[in-house]
Amino acid sequence: MRQNSESVNLASQIARAAIAVANRGVIAMIGVKPTMERIVESGNKISGIVDTINGNAFKTDILTHNFSVEAAPHLFYAAMAFSV
Image (tube, rainbow, N blue to C red):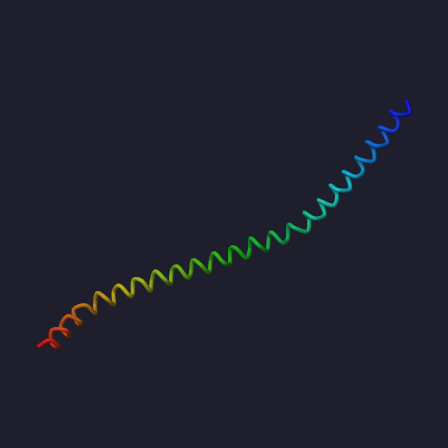
């Protein structure tokens, strides 16, 4: 009977310790949530910036291509004139 009582007391202590750890975990998670929301918000802003940069790079690539296509005949005639 005494051993049974000691086992119940030990189990009760372990349960109280587990509840305390769980409560600390809940408190920690409550603190983590706003941080995670700020990280998601920052990630969305970064994604928008990267999209803008990609759009500008694409436009620059198109402009460069168009310039080279327009410049090629002029360079050809300039080279012909120089070689004469």
